[in-house]
Length: 281
Length: 255
Image 1 (cartoon, chains in turn green, purple):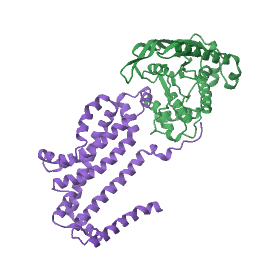
Image 2: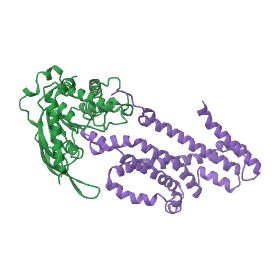
Image 3: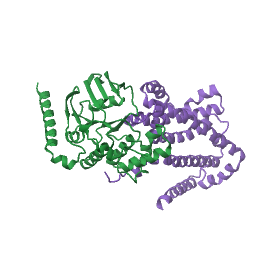
Image 4: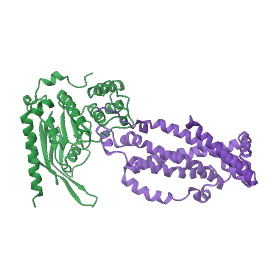
């Protein structure tokens, strides 16, 4: 059973040499209004339009409260937008589906299931035979570095391990798009770095489309092909920056790369500017 | 070792205090612990009283069982749907503070003094804590957990049964444990009010006839019944929700 395409196959095609990919996700003039506890309308997202190419790693970067997670939930079909629509491969998204796999900051594992049970849940739900689902799930757990922990309950795991399980659980049902909602936000710096590296390794093997929400500039630049910068209240797209750095990326090499540093500084400056503009009367 | 012996010592201590108090007071209506214990074999050896016990346990089992079947789904639905909750909440708030035994006269008027009336009272007594805990348990289920299930293709009904139910199970079982004790209490009180058969019937008939050793022996038997049921239930509970036990709280150190 092949869990993912082999590494060598993926390596032959660096991102820059790819043919112009078709749009996987199209976000079309999406606005979203929340009702606050004071029964006031709060415009969380205003007129967001964004196209995500097939196989692209796109980060949505912005300050907390800019609606970036809400945008991800709308793509996931978990939240219905007040206005506008989202299409996946040309078809309007009406609700959640196994073609879009979420990974949440809160892990959201099923605590009554073991690690293996969690990962097998999706394939079993999709109709896979027990033995096939088990074999595939064990392989995935090995890939995320959790071999030997199959029989543990989520409660027994550290945060980083839980997020590895959550990633394996989502990969197990082969979503075409990964929706990652600040997945490493609750982890300490060291664990966070390790998981970023592992995520990149996994992604570089099978090149799924990824929408990745974060508030860390370094994380966004390190991982992405494209960084979508958002500003808050109401959430708008400020700018979209292509990250033209070679892959496969190695963290230690990248940190020394002046182009990486330029991207980080450029983006941080732009956020500083918009902050000042907002503070001006 | 000491932890196992301690409860036994507590029981012996209690019986000793009882024995001494009874000897000191020399009151006819307060038999000694030994007299009460001596009366137990006679009760348990009597065919009539065994029939009475069986009738009690049957009503209790039916009342408890039906209450679980009705209350768990209702509580879970209330916890996940505001509409369902706002419909049933006022009703439950009215029923909640009313002692269920106080409803016995009306129920007897309608349903007679037979099994149905008593089982209904047990049902009412068990329902409220089970509904309440199922409601709280369902309300606390993380939204993102349900979203994860929805992304895997689970329908709303499947999410209810396969995510909300197991996630809320520890809380539901806490409600069931309270419900079990209440089932015993309402069972005895219902038999006290509508005397016809049952353990409560034996107890209060003995009281009327001044057979105080039987009264006290019955209290011991009913108490032992309650403790055994609780211990049995606790075993089942611990097995069902092993994954939520605090012994698993220590996370491993590995990123």
